[in-house]
Amino acid sequence: MVEAVLGIWSMKLVRLIRHGESAANAGEASMDHATIPLTVRGVEQARLVSRSFTFAPALIITSPFSRAQATAQATAAVFPDTPLETWLVQEFTYLEPARCAGTTVAQRRDWVEAYWAKADPEFRDGSGAESFLDFISRAQSFLIRVAAHPAQDIAVFSHGQLINAVAWLIERKPQQIDGQAMADWREYEIANHVPNCSGYILSKHQGDADWRVIHSVPEAGCPLLDDDSAMHAEQRLEDAGESRTGLRGCQMPTDTAAHLSAREVCQVLRDVIFERHTMKKVGYQSWDEIYAGHFLVDVDGWRLSIYNDCDELDYCEECICPVGRRWSFDSGDRYGTDPVALLSVWEHQTLERLLKEI
Image (cartoon, rainbow, N blue to C red; front, side, top):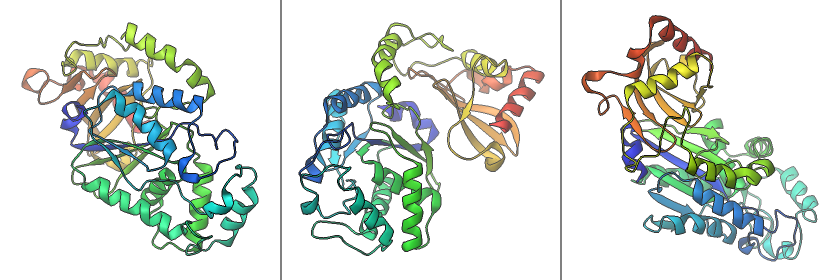
């Protein structure tokens, strides 16, 4: 299970994944908002998502809507021992379902614009429709429930608007859900469109009060399947299986819990220092904002936790390579040797500068 690999981080990861392309997404008329099927392309996207997981998630959650369930089932079939639960993380149904039956997205456009122009969070369009307050309440309930769940690595198959409602609550922290908040969410949702089978990652360390949101990151379970990447994803998966080279001296071990060495991780840091590879922060906080704590970075799929000691580069806490091998400060090399300690003074100073710049 992924907890065995990520456990030392004491971090909960929740992957919010939008369903694959549906018939409505493809412009077809739909009879019932809850039972819209996936297209052939959507089925293929769901299959690619299922193959993108390096480790089994501890829990799979799906919306009750058909298109999300079909997407989730592809991953559930790969990991049959992982529990699969249905939660109320379905799409926002703000138009009356009965009058939408048999219509396309284009035919509903005027109704959509009229609904949002009203900017009334308590308004319900008709039988079976939700108010904006109802919708946000569901997103809030999800955050409370998922935070309390004991599973540490969770995959959630949901819908674009629900995913953005969750992210908006975390990032904007609205004090009240009024017309202004409704307009702000609508602007946020348009600006942060979630493509099919893409999504966000929520992370939270033990003891943290707030979640962090990583937008549109091609994590396991959240590939960014635009037209080009979808076209070549299968080949990339095959290439990855045939050759685990990389930064990449990260060979696929027979035991996925096999350790990296401190020198292997140090080489990754040197690749960054000498600009052979690019380092990106994981999360929204900068080095300065963390000041004293763990700063997470990604180097072409390698995840490293580096300790910021009052604005100074101290040590590497942990590294996980793309195929799951791990180095950690307390279970890696003996006597506390860490990759940062193997750097020269100049390399140490350069890495610290680069960390402050990202």
